[in-house]
Every structure is written in structure tokens, then in C-alpha cells.
Image (tube, rainbow, N blue to C red; front, side):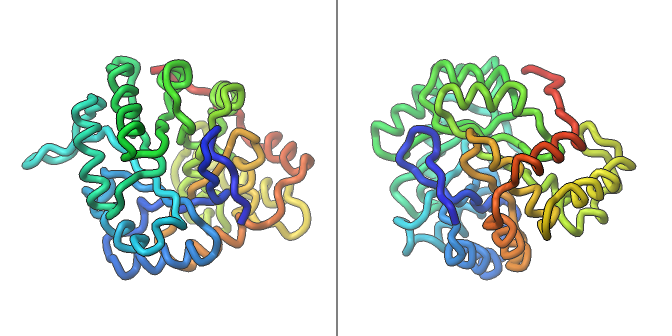
Length: 302
């Protein structure tokens, strides 16, 4: 599988990574998916301290501890669980980030994190303090690089302007083209990579997607989606599948370093990898996709 440079760092990530949120809590099952991903050329695993209350990090840590040098580990911070209470609270403070990283390192069974990402963010955050925390973690050798996971243009702009982030993780797919108008040009200008999550739009953009179109998705009414799926399949040249078209659409933008679809089974992972290693979309195919899909706009700039 092709590898792309993440921002201006020395991290080269597989064009398709593995979004680990949907692995589940059965360690044997989850580990089998991770092992298969590594064998088939994926080197980029993305998790968060929030997933399954830290269990996701533990499972990944157990699975890769003997292959740590072969794996680029990304995790996230900022959502703080309060013992004895349900849910979590947002905490981008320096004290919390520097405390939380130690717990992630313990669960991941490693002494460094390749990419540490702020898991959200608002314009009201103490942004300089948050950046200072990440910079200190770099100096201490606990993380190699940092980024942000966000869909908020105003927040992304602040981190691009004020920090040394190498990446922005954001939802980006044929059905969610919001980054195209503002975010992708900004990142390209500053040599920062986009990591595209949700490229299959929750499974809508797959051959089985007709069973998942019973409700609206962003700008699309439920009744529009089956017709769009049909149009997309008709626009593809040769024998390209809808999944192939969907996974390659984000990768066609030069600012996108990786897509990170999830997988809850070996079959799903194998289908995604087979689609990801297909040939890139041609200019004609890209034009056709853009013609039948909607150029979404951000409606809230927080």
C-alpha cells in the first residue's frame, strides 16, 4: 500500500489507516483485525483515550507491543471522564493533557506516541495553554508530533496559525465535502495534512449501503441517497465498485495523507483494503462525482 508523508513530519503513513473505534471490546477478535491490517500493509492505527473508556488503547497496546517500530500510533486527548459520573467533560487544560498522556502511554504499552491529537476544541479554549502542553510533551519525548481532530473551521484556523500541528483529522467523504471550500486549501497552503475520517459515510457509500439509507445524512434527505448511490456507480469507469470510488475520492486531494475507515470484522477490513489499493480516480471520474454530489457548506463556525 502507498505511504504518504504526514504534514512536514518524518511520519509516512499508509494511505489507508485503521480507525480503531469500531473494533469492539473482545480482545481476540479485535487483535485479529489489527494483525490482518498490519499484514496487508496498514501501518497507521488511530484510537482515542475516550473509546471504550480506554479499553481500545489497551487492546491496541497488547496487539502491537512486539511490533512497535512498525506502527504509527495516533491517539487523542481532551475528553475527561469523571469517576462515578456518566459521560465526560471537555478539558483542554495543560494540566489535564500532561496527566492524560501518561495514562495513554500506559494503556498503549509504549514510551512514546507518534501523533497526539486534541479530540475536539472550541474557540473559547485556552488555546495557547493547550499548544504549550503539546510542545512540552514533544520536548520531553513522550510524543513525536501533534495534531487536532476537529470539524470547526474557526478552531482549525487558530491551530494552523498558532501551533506546529502536522495534521487535522476531519470528516470528509463524497457525502461530506465541507472541507473542500475552506479547510483543504488552508492546510495545503501550510503543508499540513488532512486525515479523512468517515470516508464511507457510515457505510452508505458501500455496496451494502442501500440498507443504511433510511434516514437523512447531512444535506441529503433519506430519499435522495439511493439515487445518488446509483448515479455514483454509473459514473465509475470499468469495474470500479462504489466502495473504491468512496475511498479514493478523499485521497484524490493532495492535502489528504490518509483515510481511516473503521472495521468491525476481518471481512470488512479486507474489502476496504482491496478497494483502497485500486487505481486512483481519473480526472473524468472525479468530475463525475463532483457533478452528482453536493458541495456541502459549514453552517456553524464555532
